Structure formats: C-alpha cells, structure tokens
Image 1 (cartoon, rainbow, N blue to C red):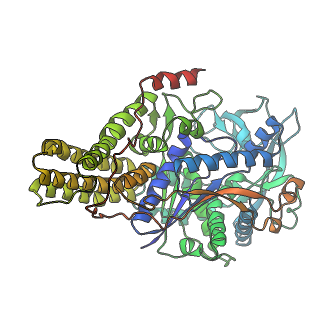
Image 2: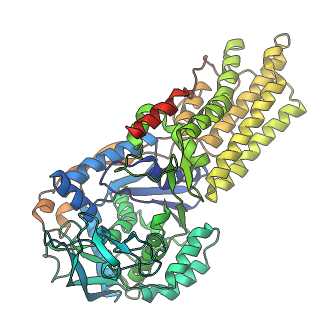
Image 3: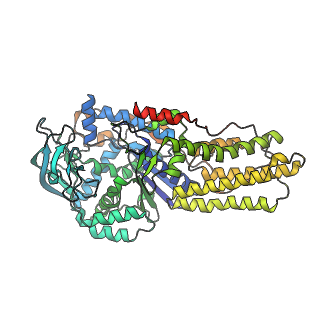
Length: 601
C-alpha cells in the first residue's frame, strides 16, 4: 500500500461550474481516486473553491454585493454540484478560511526568508475613468511575442508566455474598453529563474507524463521571468510582512494562494481528523505519490510555479512546515467544447452541472466524460452523441445485461442459482472477466481512463455475447444447465460492476443491491457544515474579513474506508433476488431538440 495525494484543481467561485469544468478536474480525479482506494492505497483527495482575486471583486461590484457574499453563495452551489456528481473528496474546502490564510502566509514568509521573493517597482494599470487599479487579467491586447490579438495582461493563452500589461500592443480594458494609464507601483515577485536548473533536473526524472504537459513545461522553463506575487487589490490574503500587513490596498496574488490550497486543504483535513500532523504522511514521505488534476490552461501553475514554491520553501533555510514533496505527475486534460463552440456563459453556450443533474443521471455524464472526454485532445460534447452513448452503450449494453440476467434468475430461481459443472465456454468467460482487473486497473493507474472504460465495456460485450450464445431462456427443460449459465453470467456481472465502479459509482451501488448485496459498495461524499478554524489567527485587516470570525461553511468529505475492493469476489448461491428495475434511463430523441432549443433561447 502506498499513500496517494489526489490534488484537484480549485474551481473558481464566481459562478456555477459547467460540464466543461468538471470534465477537466472533477470526474478524472474521482475515477482515479476511487480506483486507487479500491486497489488498497491510502488516498487523500483534496480541493476547494478558489475565492480571491479580481474577477470576484469585479463581479461583486457589478451585482451590488460584497466579495464575501458572492463567494459564500457560489461556494455552496459548487459544493452541492460536486456532491451530486459523487466526487469523493476527503476534503473539499475553500480559500477564505483562517487555516488557508495561515498556510499561505507561512509559505510566503518561508520563501521570503530563503531569498526567493524580491521587491520590484513596476508599472501598474489604472482605469482613467474610475482611478482604480486595473488588474492584469482585465487588460487585453496584442501579444508582442506571437501576435495573438487577445492576450491577457499576465499571460498569452496562445503561446503561453508570461507578460506584463505594459508589454501588450494596443492594451485595452476588458471591463469598458478604455486604454489604461500606467503608473509606478511596488510589488513582490517570485524569483522563478532561480529554479530553472532544479526544474529541468526534476522534469528529466518524470516518466509517463502526457507528452503535451512535458513539452509545454520544458518550453516555459526556457524563458522564465520573475513573476509578481502581490497585487493592488483589497480582496485577498494580506502580505505577512511588518511594513505591509496593515495595508488595505495590497494583497497576495490569487494564483499564488490558490496553488497553496492543496497543502492548506491537507492540513485542514488533518486537523479535522483529530491528528493535526497526519498531512505529513502525504507531503513528506518520500514514498508518497502526488497527482495533480486540471485543465491544460493550468499546466504552468502546477508543473513550473508550484514546484518552484515547494523547492523554495524547502530550502536552503529550514522552515516551520519542513520539506515538501514535489508532484509525481501533472495530469492535464484538454478542452471540452459544446456543439462545436467554446463554452461561454455570456454567449449561453453552456450547461451548468446543476442544470444537467436536474434532467439526467450523474453517471450518464460521468460515463460520457470518461469515454469521450478531453483526455488528450480537445473534444466536443453534442447532445446527439450524449444520447447515443447513453442509449446504445449504458442502456442497451451494460444496463440490459444487468436487467436480463438478474430478471431471469429471479423469475426462474428467486435467488442466485448454484453452478453445476462448468464448460470450456463458462471457464473462458470467467477468465476473461477476471483478466479485466489487471487490464482496466493498469490503464486507470496510468491516467488512460478513456482506454480503461473502453476495455471495461469490451468485457461487458464478452458477457453479453456469452449470454446470447448460451441462451438460458431456451434451457427450461435443463434447469441445472440454466442455473449454471445464470450463475456464470451473474458472477461476470458482479465482476464487471466492480470494474465500472470508479466510473459509475451510483449505478454500481444499485447493481450491488440488485444482486442481493448489502452495505456500502461505492462510498459517496457527504456535505458537512463546519466551523472555520483559527479565523482570528489570520492577519486579515479589512472590516469585512474581521467580521467573519466564527462563521460556518459547507465542506465535502466522507468515509471511504468502506466499499468493495478491486478484486474478484465470488457470488453466493442462494442469495435472494428480486425482479429488477432498469438501472439507466433511455433518452428520447426529443431531448436533442429540446436541449439545442435551450441553447438558442
């Protein structure tokens, strides 16, 4: 058994998340975590809502609410949506907690003490009409490196290079289109070039990474520049230096505090578990493994910036938390589009997780993401393809096998029948299904989930073929042989259900019960209301922050020590069976027209 950290990208709390978001960070991380637990590993899956930064401030201003009120609202929406998908977080928390502030400020201070944070005077953008600071991400212009005409003031999404807003050609405000004014301002920068050699050496040791992630990361290291770690902003983690901590106009940049969330969430989980030092087993044990799940737009933060923070904090001077492990692998997905268009809430090219789950089963979405999602290439979600996959593969393939095998056994025996002497065909099927534990498991472990679920469904196809070939409905005159065939089929169904459990946990629990099983087969997360930890211990100074002491908020957590293991388990003859109801819902052709009409309305 090994310890495995599943560090899942933090969804931004400025609105509900859509299915494109969860295809990158949510479902892939949960499939992996469920499998690793079933295989006997000690998994810690953590994340939370990312709640600081300019977009929150801008949206709160537009809605006439405080940033706190905005993030409180969307934190709860996102928690409920991820719960509905069955994402098995050990802790899904948020970045506006006292615990998170403490950990962020500790890492900032450690990097500063080790000489990796430097002060620089730079040009900051001001809105001429309001006089307020205009954050980098809200400035757009032409990239001076590649010529992309929609580069942001902090980074060009086309070539991936880090930028400053004053470098843009023809800069303009994304808020109102005006040309910003640039004035001198002092900020702290993370000295990324100091880590170039260490990062290259570390990347040289990485094996099995997706080629796009490794290539992109190496290209970034070739031209590292110091990166701003603070911003002119009122909403964020205060700077923990004596001359800066009481300044209301300077805050730690959101990208810095968000990546530290993986560590702060682990520490919060440990504190809530009753063993405050338990997090160290995943962060300091050299045998522990850490896998980071995200969309491709976040690669730079996880393969370059976060490792630099970890390296800088861990040395040369020892810091309070001690040395911290670097990622084992950065697991990045590509983009999911919708009906050929990029997801866009403003253009109504979107379906939010909440709306999806009101109309369709969670496992139908999980299945589509696993079998047809953007694992290694940009892929397109269409309602016609979603319906086809659901009806032809889930309903007609897997669901029909479950229904007819259990139904026939219940009708003719009322229980799982005993097996007589097995034929070569019986033995071959059982061996093929058991082989799936190795083939499917290895693929999930290597983050090839599309291939893994395809292999699992191929095994389901073998069972369907066996069932059709043996035709137990024709064996009414040979009840013993009918019983044997049904026993073999039900054994295969149970094993296939285990193979599909990481992908389809809701259906897996139901099928377990249809087979006469009791107890928890696929553990589910729960929403728990908790009190903030050490809010008053933070160095926050704004009136809004100080008034938040003692507040509660929802987290996702759960007991995942229960549930089935990744192994063949013999079914018990004599287990009572009831006539089943369908596990999956067939979708009518009209849903395609209805959903497309919603997009156009």
